[in-house]
Amino acid sequence: MRVSVALFTADLRVHDNPVLQAALKDAERVVPLFVVDTGIRRTGFAGPNRAAFLADSLADLDAALRARGGRLVVRVGDVVEETCRVAAETGAAVVHIAGGVSRYAARREERLRAELADGRRELHVHDASLTVVPPGALTPAGKDHFAVFTPYFRRWESFSVRGVLPAPDVVRLPDVGSVGLPRAESIASGPTSPGLPAGGESEARRRLRSWLAGPLSVYGDRHDDLAADATSRLSPYLHFGCLSPTELLHRARAQDDPGAHAFVRQLAWRDFHHQVLAARPDAADHDYRPRHDRWRRATKEFEAWQDGRTGYPVVDAAMRQLRHEGWMPGRARLLAASFLTKTLYVDWRVGARHFLDLLVDGDVANNQLNWQWVAGTGTDTRPNRLLNPLVQARRYDPRGEYERRWLPELRHLDATAVHRVPHLDAATHAGLDYPAPIVDLAEAAARFRERRGAE
Ligand SMILES: Cc1cc2nc3c(=O)[nH]c(=O)nc-3n(C[C@H](O)[C@H](O)[C@H](O)COP(=O)(O)OP(=O)(O)OC[C@H]3O[C@@H](n4cnc5c(N)ncnc54)[C@H](O)[C@@H]3O)c2cc1C
Image (tube, rainbow, N blue to C red; front, side, top):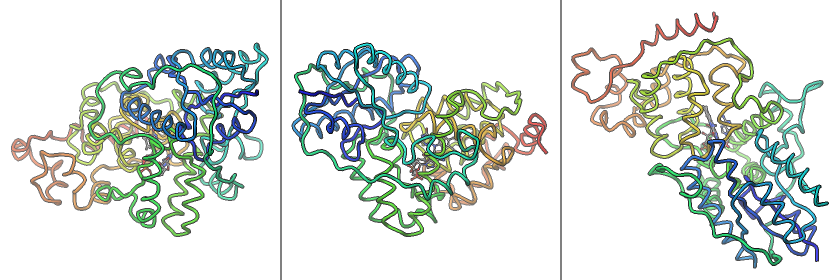
């Protein structure tokens, strides 16, 4: 009897899962395996919010496999050792895994390949699992990846994307032992955000259906409107692979309206950052384009930023939402990151770390490379652009609703008054339980230009 292992990583789903499908195709019995990887804990990447979402997602995956006659096999330990152990115990000839893009994933793949080969077993890596276009599938002439989004997007749009794979009807396991499903606290300890979304493929598919049925059509016009909350909120489901980006693309394209076009472009950004990281894994912590920055330490200002107490309401609202939900919309991330790296001139790595501690969709490719994009050390073709938080607030939160939603101490004010708060004199400010601005924007802009050596 032929056995294979489907090793789940960031693809926690039964629909459109190339790893699971390939494992089922080449064997009569399949071990759907998840290893609670103690190595990831050592990298400091396992935040409590993501641990809670992961625990939900594993329970949901187990239920989906049980409905098909199988179950999820869980082990705890070093992912390579545990996978090889399961393969040996069950006599599996092949282990299937999705191709990852981080340094950690590359090393895991390399070790798995070598250690499985010692037992005369094979590793099959499926590259079209975690992104729509496999990293490295599109390259400009003479280069190993695209460094600019627009030409990448042009090629990405005409890429021949694989079709959507059905969920299997039946999954049959060999005789194999498993520990129980992990609880969130055993993956990462610490408090979770109170407004955290529920994880899992069932929840992802429910959200996908309601997203396609309505809000998607106005995405183009409203995705930057902070108060409208008009983005898909699918990012954590994409991060953990509860939803396949390929299926999402096909289903969005089938809508064929301007909202869908704008949305599909965002999925291309996700692929873009993945292909950059695959080619330059060190971009997770080194400047992609060094600008010889002499970053400030500014501990007090950094803490004010973390706590949502900078005195700039739109930045503070964003940072409070992050703490409360473990998530924020893209525009809010841009504003908050720009304020830290350009207005306060603090190293992007420090801000990216804080985001990773809290974000439920926290992702090495998307987080680190978006931070670099904002800081001007990444792929932005206008690396020295500065976002003014007052102008941004008037443009993307004209009625001050988003600011007042997240800042209870300003809730009694009307829209124009919220926007005037950073300009109040000291005496008027004293009447509010809200800080005066921690930095003068004109001085900050001059400092940034001088230190960056920018025009
Ligand atoms: C400083 C900073 C840090 C970020 N960190 C992360 C992160 O850790 N994880 C993460 O998934 N995204 C990150 N993003 C990208 C983006 O902000 C989020 O993906 C998006 O806000 C998630 O909300 P949504 O699902 O409602 O997005 P929608 O607007 O509905 O977009 C749909 C999907 O497209 C993808 N997407 C959208 N914008 C981007 C982008 N700029 N880069 C890459 N993919 C994108 C996401 O997968 C998203 O779920 C970051 C952006 C910035 C500026």
